[in-house]
Length: 405
Ligand SMILES: *Cc1c(COP(=O)(O)O)cnc(C)c1O
Image (cartoon, rainbow, N blue to C red; front, top):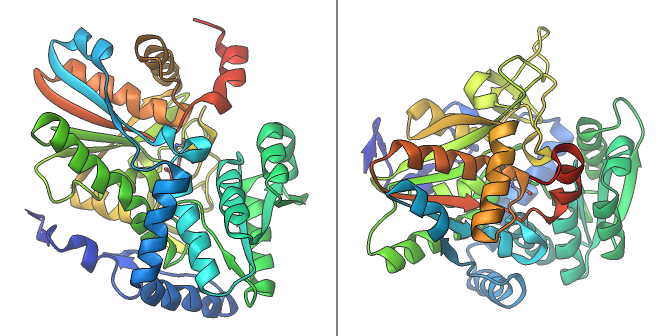
């Protein structure tokens, strides 16, 4: 399929280019000492990930440890409200550890093992990436250092406990605002000093090359499975595919399976409390081009051009930029990016729980809310929603803030 002069038959092979660019977005904007370490990861990824042994081992792990393939569920009771529109969810909530993040963490940690590294390093905000990586590290017998702001450590006690039980070192970061941004800085600094023995594992399709490509490739299993399963279930392709976008990894996973199909694709950003800067984290919808955390993309900036403060009820979507590939697909018009606010998200959280017996993550509830909106507008057809994770982690917060509906 051709779209704005891009041939989507060969798209995944051609993008990013060798330097990690998707059009003008992506690349690697980091200090030279870190660039050497990144080059080592890039070279290893290009050679090791193509080896039969690596691919076979990752396949076996996905099947025997992660619980893949995850199913697609038809939302029958919800769909019955919309006449001729059928809604479906791809069940990444049924992945071991409860979200799609394990898809790339197992890949990154397997790469670390093949590179002969002893340790994986990462930062975490809400703790979801930290838990997934700590799980992968325990599986492969790697050491695991997770950098986390002191404020987040207090807020996310259950995830901190999980990481520690899994054997990870949770390293408290006590400078600045003591949240995610400082944790990123501290983890990068540690990696600069330890790159001989360690690899850095980014938690989404963000950061310098090769991470946006590598994380997308590891997540693409979601789209490959979903396309096959959907056709097997219904005999045709879905009319629309929907996913929430924070950094954008679960979205790139499912989107990559449908880019070359006549399917409308929607990436949903968090509108939080409203359109004012600081009240949302809808970077592709309201942002502009800029470089942060080592890559060029579309980001939300304050008046000094620095990353703006952002807000969302979903801590996993609370990031002032998105992966460079999303910026590229946004400009091409191949993916439509739109927003859902906190209130509609919480409604969708309860709707899916009550009508279908599935408690979704608040992040994923953004995509569910948008899927419902699409169904209300469409006369007939089908919508496939990526259910990126389960909502167990969010239940206490929702009951405290919104009460039982
Ligand atoms: C972390 C997380 C997200 C956001 O990350 P992406 O890279 O945008 O996918 C979405 N859903 C869940 C359940 C998460 O844990």
